[in-house]
Length: 514
Image (cartoon, rainbow, N blue to C red; front, side, top):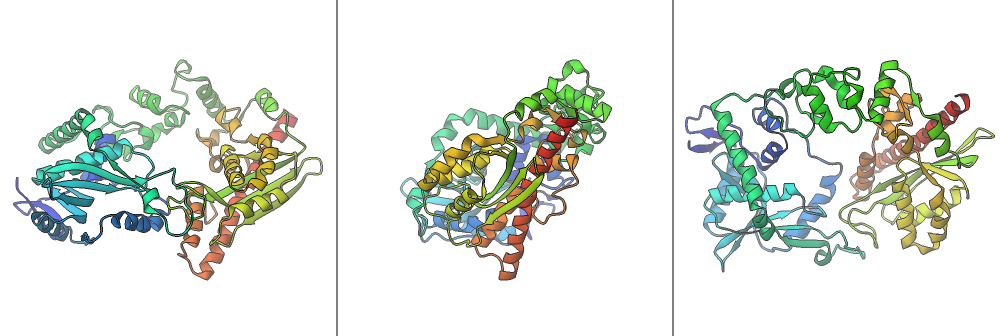
């Protein structure tokens, strides 16, 4: 079958039946879930979004650093008409011209390659990918294999596959980011060759599936088809893949049940009650009982021991941070979390008085860490218990910042043993509310035990807070919008620490009456 491109669409030679081009992302989707691949390809469901908060704010700078390693190479600009890009790449290839954003196609397979470089001495091509990542994962190797198959289908002699990624040990010294230390060039050719058997097996399975699906209808049903998904919890379209999944959601709420839930569903279980106790772990049995009775599970003995050394006055601490892959402040590394805001609630149980302290670093052009430490040391009473949710993060923030500013190392030493992780009782299921539906994040727990919720906030999660402050740093906001963003950040962080107080007080009240 001859493939023809017209007006940015792919057609058979009859011009009657447009085909959905098979992209790299569709191929990767196939390797995760065959059903999802077919559903997306046929337009039944939308492709899952891979966009991340704030990625585009740094991508342009990263891409420029990568491109600067190859001066004078032309770039194929993005165009609504994909055919123009294919034609331009074909022209460059015929003339042996290296070019960025190469647009490759073979039959119904299409891909964009960050750089297609021609090696004159060896008369062949090098495939380059630019990724703001710190390590190589399987999807990178699978992507290169896909690029290579399309390129080989076009008759290109591929010499090597290389990537430019981030050197995570790079320490920023100020000024323009030095590409020599920041960028890490890796030749993945040998690794791809060593895993060739695995990659070929995946590709052959993919080709077989495409061939079979072109000859007969695809059995989407989870029960009829050999399940390829890792977890039905994240199914794109249960109504197609797993009829009945919508009404069997309870079994997918069991903790630590990703694989088990698939088996339970296939066995016909559809509720908490339907799963026999013999198939449940102790934690899952606690969930089942709480949902059957509609009551809160509360392990008084474990919680009394957990809170046995808590001081009378306690603090509740929450940080917000940015972790850019392009370091901003001297002495920082890629992806390192830099605190710019904290919220601190201090509660005296004896007087039932609650005090709130906060610090937000508004001078976005300067390093906030020293200022955060200065104010936190001043605001935090000495010798009291400090509660955080998943306290590893808060402790790491203080430790790393104090390492850069040694005058605060004594402060760090004085507080590091005072932290208690308020997430622990919920992870261990010493306390469990049926309305949690198996989840244990602060945002899921808080509405179960109080009248507070993050739902009404403009900023509702940490990733968005990270992104919003990065927008301020990158000067992506007006003066008026900056004021609003700063207010939203304070409100978000304040509710996090206040929520910790509400949860702790609830635990104390329950312990006093049980």
